[in-house]
Image 1 (tube, rainbow, N blue to C red):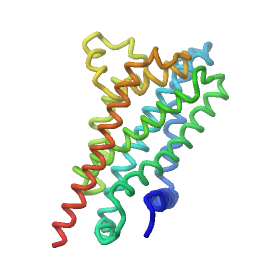
Image 2: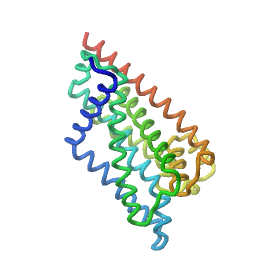
Image 3: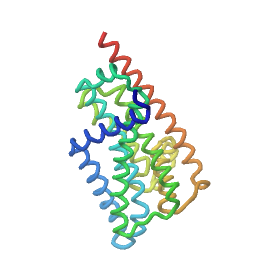
Length: 258
């Protein structure tokens, strides 16, 4: 009988193999944030302050343009594929634990996100951008962001996505406003006061502000404590919601097969 770690590794490996076969998604997840970083980095540089521009632009592009689509949209698309290929019925007959399956997907997307992070910060480095704060703290924010995105994406996919057509609409309809309010593409200082208050309820806002503060400004834990606390709580809720949604989805599949 397989241990939990072996189950998680097996799921992670299977998901990565399937994503490699779906080259278009990987290409999009790489090219889109790279183009957004170049575009906004050069726009805010204004022909001069290139290093400062890429310092401040890179964290938001990583959180919003890279991780959002791969780690939130990816699990939604994956669940649709599992349903269309009737893989879920096979999972019901297997001894695979729901938590192992869920964590396998989380770690698969963490690996993909790490690749995106290397690409984004690699481009930033070429244009003079640097990571000024604690790398360990930055990695903690990065991991929390990935886990929360995957948990939320899994919950959306398990509860609402039945066909491939169901994936893009909700992600675009709810995601783009959250990215705008979260300060992904421009500083939140340009927001009017009433929208800024609304932004404080947006988890992407806290992801962006936490990583920007550490990466671009070199701030420490105490200075980003509120953003970090919000992110920790949100990540825990998103993961629990994702696991619970997966169990409900399997139960519906089981009832449908009776």
